[in-house]
Image (cartoon, rainbow, N blue to C red):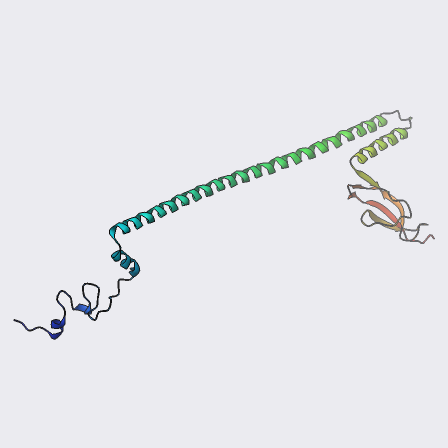
Length: 218
């Protein structure tokens, strides 16, 4: 018989002395051997202490919960897809609406321009008829009548004539001063209107050109 090492002789039968651990997960000094990283010790203990039927029921319950979560996830994905589809339709509808509004505005502008031109055509026709009169015929009455008709057209389009009276204070927003002249009018006031101005819906289309008194003639 061979002689045994004292350390081997003290080791219980059925155990390995290597690293000081037994095959049942206990160290040679009775302490628990640390399990591999990532292993849930509580879960291992529960499995060891539970009956196979209980474990099967618990696994079945967990599987049912997982299946339920999968079903809810699919429903959420379907809802998201439906909402995205509705959003795309709304965006397309809005773009179409903008295009229709732009086209309608263009049509309205064209109709407004057409209406104005149609009114001005009558004024032009009256001027042409006045010029067709014999040379010895006074056409002043016809021209004045045509001018009144033209002013009526402007009034219908909400256009007012800017034609200040002499002695009126200068308004920089409506009057353009061409020159300062000797005048009997008060110093710095309007002496005469060289060209009338026009304002439409409170917007100045053309300033009135005026001369201003320097007060030297007072």
